[in-house]
Amino acid sequence: MQQKPSKRRGEERSETLIIPHITKEMVETARRMAEQGATRAEIEQAIAAMQAGTPVPKKPIVQPQEQPAAPPRNTAAHNDTVIIPTSRPRYTQTERRAMLEEVQRRQAEREAARQAEARAEEEHFRTYRDREYGKPGFTPAAPAPAAPAQQPAAEDARTLQMPAVQPAAPTPQAAPQPAAAPAPKHKRTAPANSYKEAEAALNERIRADHILLSNPVVVRGLGLAPVIGAALDGQRALMLCIAALILVTFTRMLAVAVCHLTGNRFRPVIYCYAAALLYIPTYVLLYALFGADLTLLGIYLPILVVEPAIVKRMEFSELEPVKEALRHGFNNALGMCVVLLLVGCLRELLATGAVFGHVVMHNALLPLAALPAGGFVILGVMAACWCAAANLYTDYKHEEVRRLYADRKH
Image (cartoon, rainbow, N blue to C red; front, top):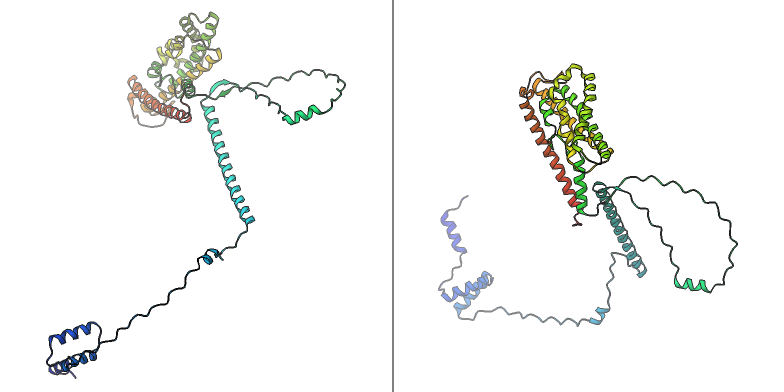
């Protein structure tokens, strides 16, 4: 049952400490004792004592007891004490020496393996550098015989003190055997000794590549008239290829052979007459292969006689061997054939949608390709892409030479 508020308030007042005639000093004393943790009975007893005029009893102050001093530390005994860990076994001096030797042996093996790997990498690097950028026509010399080992001085002195030995009877000399035939010498590549030699070898390789890096048509601009005016389709390009292959190769070889006989004089006349003489059998061969279709080439077939790709060599004063002339002439002709076939087939495909008469597409993408103007455009775009790719490759090779010969400045 709920009690009345008045009754609850009376009960609360009964719990309150009611002290009549309280003074300010009593209040301060009660507050101080409450802060010190005194109980209610102790506070009432103190206030009652203050009202009665008796002194307030105080709690006895407990003095802290002095702790006995620690005994002095035995420093000598501590220094002589050695703590031996029990988590691992204790090794003897011999075992420690063996462990140290084992660690040193493993380190030596790792160092030897690292040095062997470095030597192999360096050997591979030098082999690649000498193979790619060496000087042709080099034959390595035979290794020098090893010098006989010299005996020490003590051994010589002991030999002098020995008694002389009687010489043995001379033995009959054997018949001299015929010397063995020398092994054939192969052409090898001498390692380039400097950066300049490697750079010169690379430039020579680039100049000798007449198919890709130094193509006579798209790189040097020779033989443009037949490519633009006559290579309208695959068949005409094939006829021009055969004619160029015969004229360029054999004109150079025949002219060089005649120049060897004349002492390298009258070079322009010799080159022109050699090309004119070779044109007759070339025309006969082409007529036997293609018949009346040969007339489709028009004036561009006989104009090959004075084509710069054929007679350009007469401007150089140095005289090359006949074998080198045959090789360079064939490479130049092969480079012209590659461009002739590419341009002819591409123009036929863009103009008619066919290649060598076989239909590939039913729509003509660029009818202008059948005209000389279209030939100029197609050949210009092809030359730009070709030269860009060739320049990227040559720049990469030059940078590779610089990196390989970075330690050699001259």
